[in-house]
Length: 312
Image (tube, rainbow, N blue to C red; front, side, top):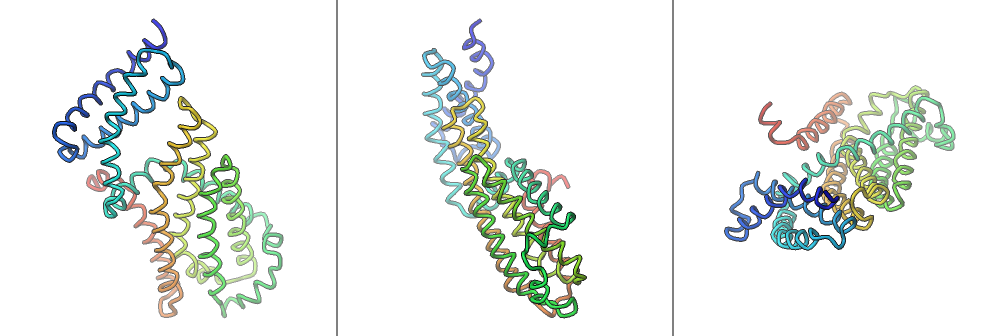
């Protein structure tokens, strides 16, 4: 049996299933599909698209490529009409598309998180803050003694820095991921250096954390998602798999871009918290830390699949 024949035998059951659901959509419209059927339609369409790309590379003159071109082309019209409608639906994006994409791409975000904390822990535990911050005594003078803590410097530093980091972590993914890795580790070093210095200078760390974490939890989530998106683009460039490199980059970039509106929303929420809650003098540091924990829990609940929530 030839390689193409084995390829057809292995995957034709999926193509027949896509044919059936596409024919159903042609007759009754995609709005008549259930949520499970729409998800299955999307899965089969993407799978057939991957198979078509593989056939173009390995069987460019074979008998299966024209069939896959017709199959994917027919399904494409209905599939992207559905996706465009969902993207235009703001509520649908934030309740379904964004959290689902976060779940699908969690490995990239986890890798970005690991790179950031690699830099943070290195700087915090190995005493490199003097070199990273330049003049620690000047910072100590700005902050004042522990009993006279000034949070303006800390808040401004993290809001501006983390927003910039989030943008750079995504954009620099086009440099085969090297830029994204650099941004994440370097900024982890900066944050670790600052925390390391504050610990060794005898600052009130409960106060310090209460001036950072209420908005910092959401900001860091945005950074890690941005870094994951940058790494996703890099993966498409470096490890195309069965696809052509061009197709792989397009596919991974499209998935990464899906995260951007949600990341922008997280940064906006963080800015609102930083501007209206974090500086409040009437709220105790402990309550601010409790609030920070609640924001983290809220993010987890947002990204947990609905089925898991219902089972709980």
